[in-house]
Amino acid sequence: MFNAFASLLRRDLSAALHIQSNWLMPVAFFTIIISLFPLGVDANPALMQRFAPGVIWVAALLAGLLSLERAFKDDFDNGSLEQWLITPHGVYPFALARIVAHWCITGLPFTLLAPFYGYLLGLPAHSLAAAVFSLALGTPVLSALGAVGAALTGCLRGGEMLMALLVLPFYVPLLVFGANAMDMAAAGLPAGAALAILGALFIVALLLAPLAVAAALKVMLD
Amino acid sequence: MLDATKRYASLPSFYRLCGRLFAWLLPATVALFAAGLVWGLYLAPADYKQGEAYRIMFIHVPSAWMSLLVYMVMAAAGAVALVWRVKLAELIHIECAPVGASFTALTLATGMLWGKPMWGAFWVWDARLTSELILLFLYLGVIALYAAIPDRRKAARATAVLAIVGVVNIPVIHYSVIWWNTLHQGPTVTRLDAPAAHISILAPLLFMAVVFKLYFITVLLARLRGSIAEQCRAQQWFRDEAAGRA
Image 1 (cartoon, rainbow over the protein chains, first blue to last red):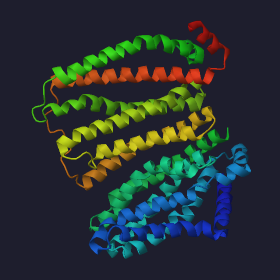
Image 2: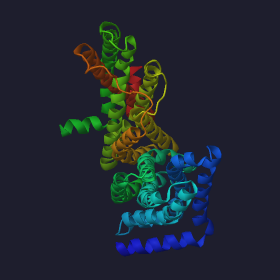
Image 3: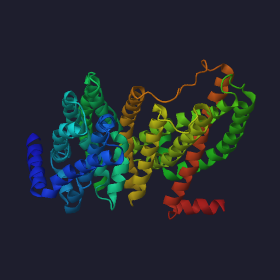
Image 4: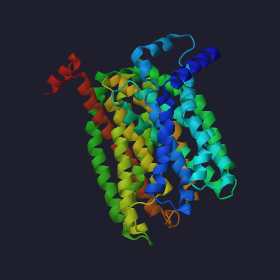
């Protein structure tokens, strides 16, 4: 089962890295959303520091959606999903590999860029570690919940907008706790509580989301 | 018990049961609803702080309770539909969604009407308002996903997966919003600062809560009859049924 997961992950990643736009687009989108906020709201440093955590998180949620829409589309179209359903491993390793692969091209670069963008938006240096931790724990949840939406809408025509409608309400806790961890750290307060909750969400989401993805894929292939 | 369940899970007999129950439930719901309105809007005493404006609560609070209860019913029926593939459960699951969305919208609308004179604003980013709004989005997601999938049975099972994921998420979303709200101190006092409700107010409120549940069952049965008729209109038993009644 682990071998199946590892070889799938390797295959997904090499496929994603092979096409430049696959991994560049989410990062570019993430950057653009963040740079729009100072233009739209105010570039006053004190104000920017207040909205920086929320902006970084909203940008991560939206940019994560961008590459999610295609997560299962090709497998629906070329029939490899049916093959996965009948393997002895079941759909679980497949779903988990997709979630991890999606995180590697979205959540991981967002996490690495977060302290840099946080600094540009005026977050104090001592809060940048909290920014890294909050994205590192939160973005895998984003990929996991998003995969459920992608599995439900992957084979539908025009499913992208629908997926955003299904998934974004589920992202509310991530936004709240993720931004709060950065907020607390920026104010010089301990961010542990919010990070601990994000950690709990991380564990629960990675355990349960592949099951929901598997159930959704089975229904859609019926 | 199991026998009876099996018998009524078949669409023809459930269709007939719906018809019989509906004939009783409709007048009962209308009569009790009228009684509850008179009790709540006229007989119950005015609140000593909020005056008459508090009376919208007799619609608002039962409707808020129903918005959550209907989601639970929808998810439970969805789970039954996924596990046992009972066609009736699929129908119950999906017919709950518009009713629940209406309760949620009604809760938001009455809350806003009450908020304007009491808080001075139609909308504040209060924890309960915000989580009710997100609940409305969850209902709309179920309705939109159901509409997007051409095969009705597949659509119902897909929305069942979504509803079950939603049930796991609702408490997390709710508590995250409460936490967010306590950190970003709200602009107004959002609590009913009356003392614990007096029995003369509590009694009509609980009565209305029961009436709302009755209303939900009545509307659900009517919707189920409609959707069974739509799905079975080409089948022989339904034609016989329709001919027998005409």
